[in-house]
Picture 1: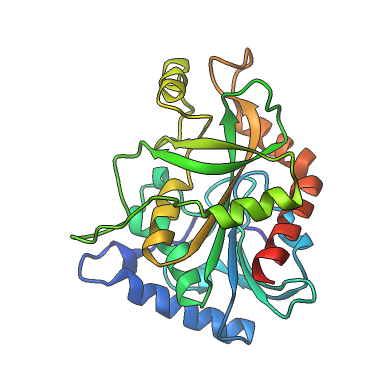
Picture 2 (picture 1 turned 90 degrees about the vertical axis):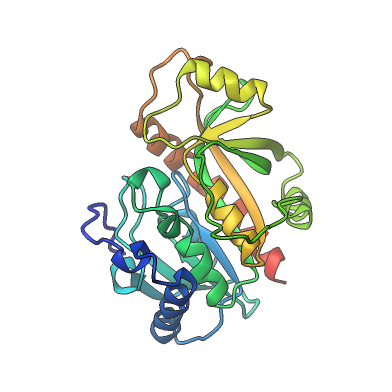
Amino acid sequence: MRCVTDPTEDTPELDRPDIDPFEVARAAAAVIAERSGTDHHDIALVLGSGWGQTGDLVGETVATIDNADVPGFAAAAVAGHCGVMRSVTVGDTGRRALVFGTRTHFYEGRGVRAVAHGVRTAAAAGCSTIVLTNGCGGLNPAWGPGTPVLIRDHLNLTAASPIEGAHFVDLTDLYTPRLRELAREVDPDLDEGVYVQFRGPHYETPAEVAMAKVLGGDLVGMSTTLEAIAARESGLEVLGISLVTNLAAGISEQALSHDEVIEAGAAAADRCGRLLAQIVRRAVA
């Protein structure tokens, strides 16, 4: 598989205010249907930092598509992410998963539409469920590096929303209780927490981490919440899973680095991959 880490493509069709982002999503879904040989996918997975290898365990890859070949998408901008998407058969269920090897982060400066584009494309491709994964900092010292944690709710501290206009979307139970219960059936030891998204790309200060804890946060990172909101707007069920790759600033005595994130993800890849594969198979059964 060819993974791209140099972002050389822009997404001008999403930047223009006269362009409908949902039309771009439908165009992207049409390309995916042509390249994958199916006009319908059932579930989508967004693989964040530390989750890149886990898609291999979900099922057999039927088609691999470079992001740059699909309208609205761009190459991966973060080390540890892969700039391709895959159409994968989910075990022997007969279902298809659309696996995104990377995401657009808000801090990349491409705008909220680009952040939400993968989610909207998944909905246009027929998906009814999306699994959003990420690597994050943990506020609970009991969650060492390599610990997967279900997201039960979030705090969006980006001061942005993917929803445009007077479209009021209820975010109660945004992270679908049915899917969280299903995940706990697979692994009863899974803990839950509140994910806090900061804009990034700098890591949080110890004071910001302390603030997040006072506000009720358990996990801190730079992704996921805007995608989850866009998923709810599009009518998708949402499962969020964080991989704790390090203790957050002020809790850890060590300096934070992206290399640490990648190393923790590599160490936990097999466990997280098997967990994710079992959850996905049950979700589409």
